[in-house]
Length: 333
Length: 286
Image (tube, rainbow over all chains, first blue to last red; front, top):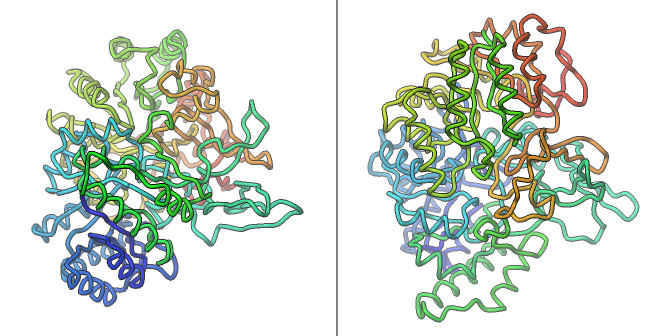
């Protein structure tokens, strides 16, 4: 079972590998990936350096090209595939049909992973991508319950990777337009959800107002722990309830430590840690805990128990300092 | 360009749905989509009921498309989907790649609904090769996007634009309606039947923002692109979709070209931002 960690820059990449990651994933410094934030990601030269370092450590490196090529600008995305192939990365993580087609036909030996942004949740979708583009692995959207993951794992024609820890996207990934509805930019089009340039905090007496493109998405106490402002984690009223509540979800992170044995039994090949936009300190903390947890499980699969200090360490780096099992747990749904 | 009527995205009582399509049958609307696209727990109408409605509409001279579920999670949902695809009479609207696969396997043509990620010509051509006859443009894309795509070459497939109605913005495993009403999804009592236009959510400054429709999140504002009818027509758009939110949506679609641009609404409860490459909720006076 692979521990796959995020690398927003070279420092995070080295930290992740030293802390026990089996593989890292990263993006180029442009809008070909859905974490296109200023100061993040890799130039082709840095990617080369990253690949070299990773290979020296005997680990794997995956390049994320998970946004959708724009008409007349497709070249940028095709070039990203070319760069990856020439750098010798171990796999590409892709969502767009035309890009899968391009990668599969030009570099048939380069393994393809279906990005979570492709939103493949069922056997039919997985078969399609396998038959047409020979994908080796698919990253499952965070919408399936543990039972559904198990059911799918019995019939899937490809390896399955799941999100194990990190910011919780509560919508079927790749098919959420909440960010673009409010800001004009979405992960699919602009390369990020809730772009920072649209975020504004405003203090008003005892309150902090969080605005996204001037839309008030939350009002909180000055000292309240807040996550990064996204539409799905704001507090709103309804036509029947005038008390502002987290109608969709509260700021919280996904933490599946307690599901580790079940994920392993479902033959999930890779556990993904979210957070290319987070600091090397976050990457180190999360990687260390998960490395320990996976090793503990593998040493004695029948008696695995999560340790209080693991959960505590993870809660510290979580949004709102709380964690959830998200859709894996039926009652959450 | 012609009008089309999208599938009903809400949970309406069976009698209301039948009344709705009975009226549709006597309208001039040439293309009608029907079927449950949001949640398999909604069982007011069964597959056979939809087939009956499809026959009735076809006998009234309509082209009928069976719309399928957008988010497939349980194996039983995929089995049900295959049954719909293999109905033997009507073309389907695929709203998930699983449906595309089911159609492709059976060498059946299909329509791509708005939740299939079509963001460039090469992807559209791939889907066309697999049997796509028409696609509904993803709602966050713009007139500029469409112009760029079709200026490269004249497409061999038809184009439909989501022109009027509440925008489908997101899908989740979580049922927001049940949660808001203190119920768990597995015992939801199909409570979304209480909100025939979804449940309106507003910001703490009373700005209408979202509309909760079971596992789907919609826009609070209604997109209205009726002022763009003639330019869409010139561009080569084949269908202008009206997404039903009440019985009056039938008249909207039926008299689309008579009422035309003078009926385009530009106020807080309407939006057209996406079409003009802006935030979706914006309403521009054009």
